Image 1: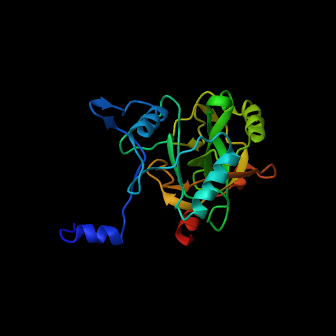
Image 2 (image 1 turned 60 degrees about the horizontal axis):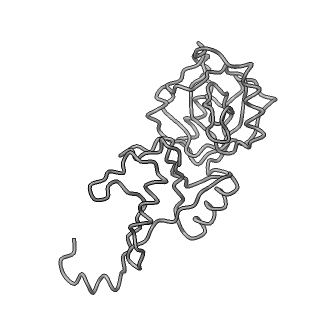
Image 3 (image 1 turned 60 degrees about the vertical axis):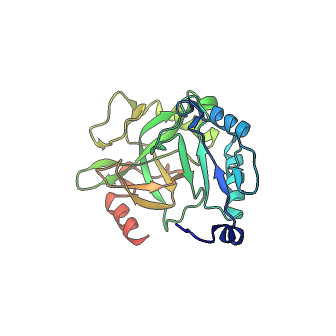
Length: 249
């Protein structure tokens, strides 16, 4: 910490504080209040000036708007964006973003040298205008040694409304009451699926996973690319291929 010439140095290297959230104001706690209320209060109490600014915030209503905002942020030299839920359960959780906060550094055509084919083994229903439609899926890869499908990643990006509705209808015939015996998955989806439907996903990189511990790997920023009608479940990417991707990326 600098002790001397602070004022002179601050003129040479101006510092600006960007405020992005509010946990407490006076004696009132905002930790359990949803994001829109926290943001509204911030806008009421923060008087912006050269050294104090509010982080830019926009309301996104479609994938196209998300891509436009993301690309704008990247073109301005930013690393990416934070996408946050505005639902009532979007309270502040210290040290835990979960799926209510998503750090997005890559959205399209990930940096991996190859795409990954996964089989769908579980799914979650969407919210808001996608209520009743499956919006997030768990994709698994194949372990030829055990003849089982091992959970690899959750994904939702890249799914259009049309594809989501079509998959939701199709998954009705694959839905089962409990996890299939040939599936290993540490996650707990709203519905379990027989491993039948194969899809292709892209991503930013393969990462070490503390969630999908059986496989030990997952994908950063997975994006749905297409349905692979011509592929059988056992023709998908294998656990060994995931390991190779991780080691050579």
